[in-house]
Image (cartoon, rainbow, N blue to C red; front, side, top):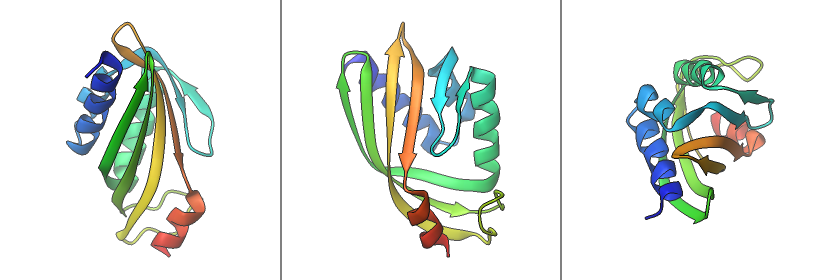
Length: 131
């Protein structure tokens, strides 16, 4: 396993363990985070805030993970299984709804850290799953 794949797998292992600090340890201080259907946020502090918000609103687990790499770049395809536990405006009301949706993420790695995370999933499919 190469360094890029190892870092991506460590990122998702920490995600599944609900270990935010270990997940953040895989990221560079100036990580660029392209949020699905949202802005690009720069920096580990912005990622920390994003992760705390997500952990408050959602309980998620990544399954069926497939990681592909080419040098410093990597892609992951997976299924997100979760529960919507706190309303995340302007999205619909949360009532613990369960969901399972396909998703993907793209990564760039440099000097032993993830410097870019770009996440994709179908928001309309997620809304349909919780409705």
